[in-house]
Length: 264
Image (cartoon, rainbow, N blue to C red; front, side, top):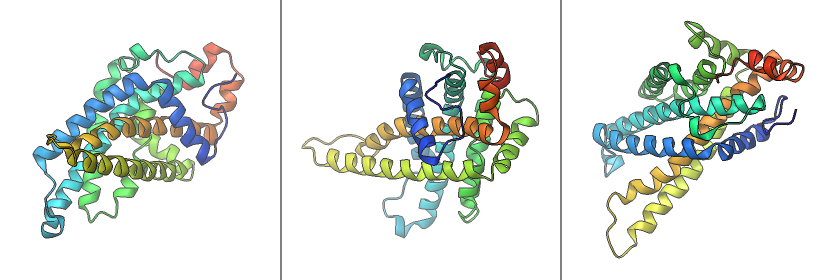
């Protein structure tokens, strides 16, 4: 069975490509939700910890802004990982994604997704406030939490334990690739956001919130892309460490759904 997510362990480049393919196949609901979350993030960060005009004269204010920013973006990516995991799961079993129902597919798992997203965001912000050094570890380790909840239908303590077990079993490779993907999209976000800010600032008419517009637009695409990467990383990690690809390739269509435990 051929799918746009290969049923085999993938290279780093293939994983990054697969995340973009997944986003392209399911972009309308993901980008729409990403836009809402990016707008909410800008409003929330501006309300709680606005960026100081002079960073070097107010390092404490900048540190607070960065912590809130990283925390809220982790929340956004985790929320988007729910529909992205549904799309990835349906892709590998050969089912249509169903864009119109992608956001409703997690169903009764949405409250748990939101709770986990807040926990992930709190961990990211807390890791930065702890001298900043643990933040990459926290970001790398938290990417499989929502995919495990949604795609594997984990319950109870498995929701927390299984992502760490699967991550460590794969030699933390998925965490490293997650960081790599984040840094790649950060470069894109910085270029587009800064460029849009400069461009809008040169217009003859003042544009309200010009500094935020470019960031909102690029984040509305970057956050879903990073969520799709998380979903692909989880499934690929299961193929690499648990033989998921072999199990899917040797079973019927109904059997594939049972093996994957994907939601409908």
